Image (tube, rainbow, N blue to C red):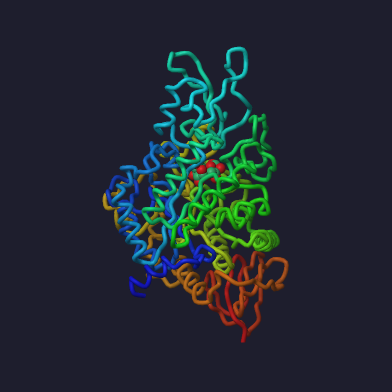
Length: 556
Ligand code: ISL
């Protein structure tokens, strides 16, 4: 398609592209490193856009690249309107955006509104100002309990381990108030009841919309409003670090958040080109999650219920049915996602043999490590199902190569605050964040040309390098390309799904003329000799679908 036509299509109003898009998550520090310092950057992304065009994605979402001391890999923002020198400059961002748009690829940026970095000028001002001042009121400062305020204001526990409150020393040197941080101590939470905070974020949204971004992924979109009075709460240890299956957590999913998204929805609607909001909201049920995407709120929200579903046919059927019903009930498309920068990569996760709550990660001493062959088969089959589903699908960089979790990172290289705040009890998320391989024979597998890498790359990753996979018709990369191409050709991103019965251990449905079946059992599944295959998650002869395999086919 001519470049001009592509640009016109991107600008077309009312296309609601996000309803059916394939969106590729770039984790900038681990994607491509043009400067050679071992940390990926924006010019690196620009230099590799052609590979994403070839993959066939509609949009990219970039994890944060704004100014940040990088205590939580950029999810601790010190200046929301600038690029961290690690990643380049605003001019590099503009160039990347223009180059992506010229290829017909939309660009979504990450917005982190729940908290800032403690290096943000507002927080620095708050530390210097007096209790009760307008500077303090932008964050959640409280007096401590106990005779001398020596106890935290309540018993909440940080998602990264340890308490959720940090006591400060006042400007005069005396022990002072406490501030709330759901995440690391370096990530103080804003007070979203304060109109000044709301106004500031409207202006930040406009800053990036004016530059031409197509939307935002909204970090911790379930946490910005806390229950009035900040009541005590003891999380269920079984529920995982995000309060997983629990209702009524006083810092998650409070009704007050919806007003904020309605406000942002209106703001985005002032712009042309169908800009979209996608919420990162970990909530106990899909029904509740659907409240984030009512017609006047966000356009999408991540389907973490789907992501968390283990390799079990009945549960997979249930979550697909529930997703279509619950999001459909509010007129929103479902989204689908299997991997991101916070979870164990799905080519490993789906074959874990011990419990592994989100955020725990896998390291050298973990129990239940996956068999890599089983993991990759299931991973490919899971993606083959996902990319056939109606709605929008999110991919995480490296999954198109079939990358497994990096499980043997030596302790001294670990960077996730989770690892430090739990004294090494939880490995955290570094294993899914290792720089990805491009060229098998180049330094750092072509991540850069110096060989530097902020997390060590496993020795066996040469076989996952993009150049190797490009030349192998049976590679995971070529499977993804085929799936994305067929999905587009058959418009599978929209339309309805008809369930079929292929037995207890199968997930089976029809999308128009295309039958999709995944075999999650242990015995081959005969599909009938009139099956004509469009794509198989792993090549097999005949018409019996092997275990841990999925296929798309027509009949007759
Ligand atoms: O990964 C987790 C815990 O180890 C999750 O609970 C995660 O923190 C949660 O999904 C919120 O994630 C987002 O905000 C965090 C950041 O660390 C994550 O990378 C980001 O995706 C704090 O900004």
